[in-house]
Amino acid sequence: MIIGKDIQGFSLIELLVVIAMIGFLVAVGVANYNQARKRARDSQRINDLKALQSALELYKQGMSTPAYPANFATITPCAKWTSNGQTLMNSFPADPMGDGCTYKYYYSRPTTLEYNLSACMEANTQGPNITSTPPSGFTPPDGADCKAYYVLTQP
Image (cartoon, rainbow, N blue to C red; front, side, top):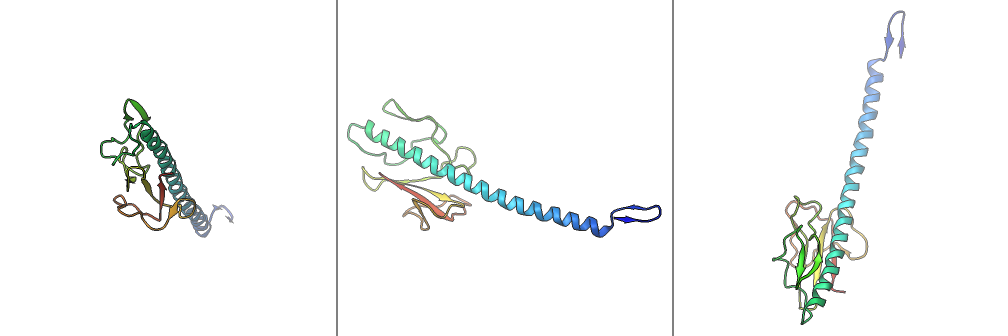
């Protein structure tokens, strides 16, 4: 601070230093915030697939001949999933990065008693059931930045 006879205030250099420091802190904070959001979406994807896994087991148990569904083509995202009068899920999950009720998870059924569920991970690249290679037949959603893939198979 310059203190003269009648003039008091901050110099231009002091103001620029403070503005630069604030800018640096904001840049660091935004980067960390974006990573935290990606990790939160990845956690939601993992929870969604685990819920789907439970619903698939209920579906198989409710069939006269145990089998998993051939595909999810007849299921509307964000709608109730029922089979044989039994509610399997109150709301079929949609990808947290999607535009509301867009389904972006991958399901395949190699045999009637096996299935694969997978999702594109934005930030999590290590952990159980996480792989760096996409499952066979998996096409990442448009604009997805897949760092890894979370894959669940029939237990």
